[in-house]
Image 1: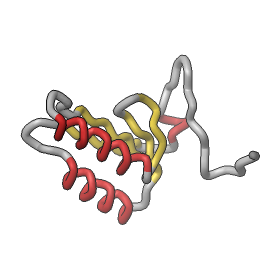
Image 2: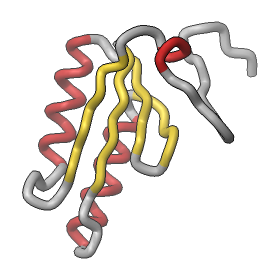
Image 3: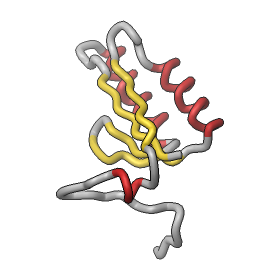
Length: 96
């Protein structure tokens, strides 16, 4: 399934800045960054549960915001992108 992960971490403290880096690192393991605090990911149901659990261990639910949107359909069918788009389709052949 294709999902969109967005987050807003309170970075007014050193702990918040550490959480921000940790949230980004977790997301990088599951998908690709499309904006500073937005990741597009393709995951199985098991990976979705793992991602959610890992993120919930990192964020402070009193200070931070985390949203995970399930995209209904293929990315190319549900996402309109304007301007710079660095998306790479890792499901097809990659030429290096």
